[in-house]
Image (cartoon, rainbow, N blue to C red; front, side):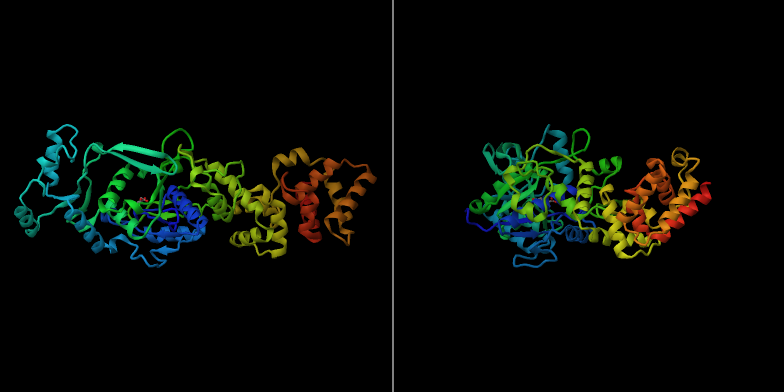
Length: 505
Ligand code: GLU
């Protein structure tokens, strides 16, 4: 079995936007598939028509496109095991439901919702299982002719899995080790409903994993309670030999306190829980996304990869290719992972730093345009090089850098009080003259000449530089002064100095 080809799947239900936890599940499947030269399948589990949300499938596909997670086969990707949308596989499921019925591993039940409710009222902790099924209206208690007649009449029914009681069911989980439960705690799960002629999640999931030759099921911890049932289903079909291996990933926890990460935490603390902005077609509500909030996809990937896994040392920055090499399911934690969104921002900052200035400038250009700035690329590249270490998001470059592109119209009052001395107007006009005389306006040359001028005149270096900064920037912030003046160029620098003197006199 070890030489079996690795085939894994990400199998979302299209019930709304893809939660960030689902993105992590897909990422871990991706890393595992790539690492083993295996296949990653994209399957849509849409057998619960009540929960279907239009647009969700497209949203999920677009999310992975943005993140750079590529699937090998599945909905919208093609492949030899299709169709990959469960609603298009009805006939397949019907056939396998019949297999279970024929072998006596499942039975037909006619109990109406009202009858079931009455039973729940009458019997404390009622569960449809070995201890109660013989007192219910099903193909185990009714004569065959009656069952056939009821079906022929069009009576609605469900097919239930006949779980044998009192058996220890072992689930081998790559992350959690051996998990065991007793089958008596399980109920006879509904596998199929005649009302919509569709299987439930459990049956469709197992049939598809089998037919699609899935080798490993890597999914969220919330599915761990279903795993024993799934093991029993594989056995009932006689597929135990090719049963996939399981790995149930740790929960994502709230950034503060305990409990599962929810959308409300995002709203409350101001971070997205969805990869892309989501417009809920039912409520009209708009939820923020990582993409629209200015995150780089590579930063999101790196951040998510470390939520529940680590490479065994303190390395944090890893490209997708490195992750593929380093990832190890056995190193995933059992304990939940705190969703530290501040760390997500840090990753974004790091990825901005690691990008070339040209690349960052390319991303900043459209933002400059939005603000009506048409700046030459080479200038933007230099500005970005000077300033990118100060931001976590590309869009924040605007506030941080705008003085490179627009001259100050106002001068910060506090800075002015503190830094603009009585002799500043005179000194700045002198400085302007010194700079005007320069043919070479390079950073180095300006710096050498201005420093010498300050020294020769016996001026106070700090006072000159502070006033100079106020004239060019309009406040007390920014990088090295001569970096700024060199980027602005001679003409603009002189204009800004002289205008500031006019205004601040
Ligand atoms: N359709 C399930 C979901 O929405 C899939 C669970 C599984 O991977 O088995 O997560």
